[in-house]
Amino acid sequence: MKILVVDDEKLLVKGIKFNLENEGYHVVVGYDGEEAVKLAQNEKFDLIILDLMMPKIDGLEACMRIREFSSVPIIMLTAKAEDTDKLLGFEYGADDYITKPFNILELKARIRALLRRSSLTNSDHSHQLRSGNIVLDTQARAVYCDGKPVELTAKEFDLVELLMRNAGRVYSRENLLNILWGHNYRGDIRTVDVHMRRLREKLEHTPATPQYIMTKWGVGYYFKAQDPDTEN
Image (cartoon, rainbow, N blue to C red; front, side, top):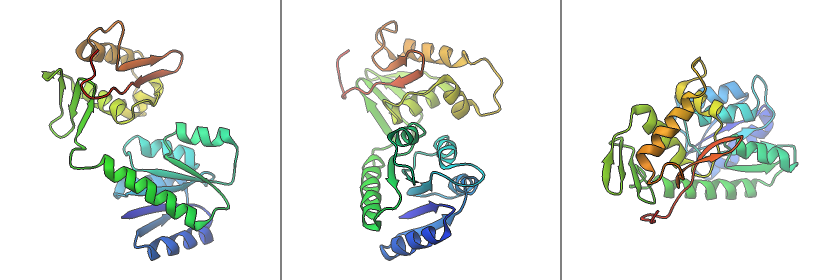
């Protein structure tokens, strides 16, 4: 397993690296937020540990940028114990939070738990996402509703895949534009609404009262997971 550890406290990084390598992990280190994003883009990691307060860009910004191209498990380290900071971290895409100072045994336990959860998600069938009567085959880029193929545009497919992989997480229109259209996109923000409407028309039994593609009024959109073969 390959782990990225990024913190501007070099002694702390050295200690974490030493302990994790003794557990058999391959550890790569970095010391600022920009370096974290570049390393995550250029190498494949099984887990990332990010400090909250770092030079250049902080851990929250780094986490958000990494989430634009990767679903790798992320643990945030912070000297702040306030619940608001933790909630903000989860909103930006963190999977777990540890407050400094921490016991290295606790960090190891959190890492094992996240890696175990991630390995279950990335099993042999991970290329198939299922929810209710919808099946998404990410390898074939094919979608089935009630067992019948549904024609989606490339962007519609990317959008529904992102939402299904992160079921329950609310994305603002701006967030979706940045992730799927890119930070330099200068089109109308209502583009997101148009794509959501089309997805509902193609995937929902009753688009006016959706069961999957949901709206969080005043916030954005999210995917509501259903048990396989749920009747709508």
